[in-house]
Amino acid sequence: MQRPYLAAPLAVAALGFTFTLAGCAGPAAAAKDTRAPTAPTGVTATAGSATTVHVMWSAATDDRGVTSYAVYDRGHEVKELPAATLMTDISGLAPATLHTFTVRARDAAGNLSPAGAPAAATTLAATAEDRTPPTRPTALRAAPAGPGAAVLTWRPARDDTRVTAYDVYQADSRVHTVPGTATTARLTGLRPGTAYSFTVRARDAAENSSPDSAPADLTTAPAPGAPPSTAPTAVSVRPARGTLTVTWTPPRTATGTAVKEHQLYLDGRFATTIVWGTQPALGPVTYTLTVPTTPGLRYTVTLRAKLPDGTWGDFSAPRTAITP
Image (cartoon, rainbow, N blue to C red; front, side, top):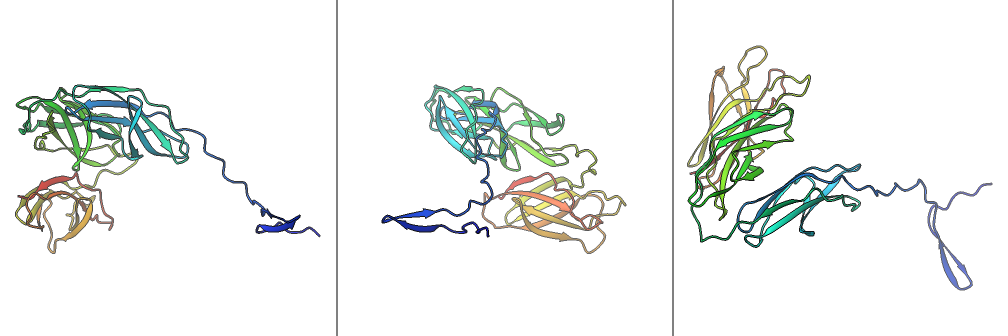
C-alpha cells in the first residue's frame, strides 16, 4: 500500500543527532518576480524658489504593479513616494545650484526600473526677505485636448520681484506646476465623463502664493457608448460666518421633470441630503449649510442629483470656499 505524504515535519534520531524531514511541499510556489517596471517618462523639474524644485513624471508600468517611485538628485536618492504620487517638491536645496533629477519605479518584489530621462533645474538666487505675494492670475480658461486631456490658459500675474511658478489646483489639490514664464499648462490622465474645476496660483521666489484665480470648469467627453453627464452645473459657494450658501442648476432629466433630491459633499465626504417638499424649479436652486464659525476654514463642495430611476448621478465640478 502506498504510504501518504508526510503532512508535517518529523524528527528522526540517528547516531545521536536529530534531523527534521520536511513534509510535502504541495503545489509549486509562485514564480519569483524578477521583471522590473518600465522607466518613468516625461520627467520635468521646475525651480520654484531658491531652495525648492518641483519634480513631475508620468506613471511607469509593471506586470504585477508599481508600488513606489524613487526620486534621485545627481544620482543620490532623495525621496521615495507611493505609486499614486506622480509629483513632489524637493526642498532644502542650496540657492543658485544646478540639480539633475531622475525617477525610478519599484515593484513589490523590490525590482527597480531603469531611470527615466534626466531633468535639470537650477534653484533661484537667494534674495532679500519678500513677504508680498503675487497678484492672482486672471482669465483662466480650460479646453479639452483629446481623450483624457485638457489645456489651461491664463493671463500672467504680477509680483514685486518676479513670478517663478504657476501651480494648477483641482479640488484644492495641486496637480501640476509650470515655470513662471508660462501662461499655459497641459493636463493628462483625466477620467472620461467627469466634471473638473481648475484654479491657478502664482508663486514667487520666496514661496509666496497668490490668491486662487477664478475657477475654470471642464467636463471631459464620456466614454464611447456612455450616456451624457448628469452632474449639476453652475455651482457657486458663498461663505459667511458660520454658513456656506450653495447655488447650482440641477441636471435635466430625460422626461424634463425637475430633480427633487441632491446629496452635498464637503471635502469628499457626505454631508447632507437636500430634499424639496414641493416641486423645485428647473433653474438655479440654493441651499444654506451650517458650518463652524472659525475663520479661515477651507471647504470643497460637490453635489450630485438623484435621478428619476432612483440612482445617483454624476458629481458636479468642485467649488472651494474659505470662511471669513
